[in-house]
Image (cartoon, rainbow, N blue to C red; front, side):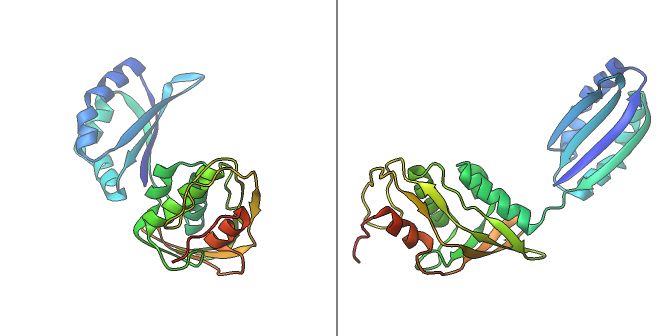
Length: 235
């Protein structure tokens, strides 16, 4: 994610605003996707504009364009300071953002952080993909609204995040266990706490593409079901 930050003073806010609004189509046609204007409390003619751009190159090209420079001059901008900022986000940050999204049951946000080619292994009998992994987490969260990973970072570098998870929650709502042939399971009031599991998460293009969970006794999906007393259909 790239942001263009402009800090400047103007001779007249009203004049500047009129020109800025007039150039709305110019900015969006150049690729800008969002923008916000801020005024300094005790200096009404001192402004900060923050714009969001899809790439550094597009923001840089716009800031260097004759049209942008002409707009600055026409609107009465004084001593502009322009910064183009590229967001730096680590694999560890993405891993934690994902877990917070699941714990908040923000499924749209969680899915947006999953690569379409994600492979989830270790906590399930066989590797599964993004949608199936999210479906399992949604199922447990529906029965345990306080579902938590209790994740703690332990290391990693580059596109790899390492940590430990110890899943917990209290079964207070009816839900369908995420296994084929399972029936609705009424709330039992039971609290679950899995053993500590080491987790390795690999990120590609800002999204989780691989999630490996240590296979430990009484851990993973089957460990949760066992603590809840769920009946697992025979296959």
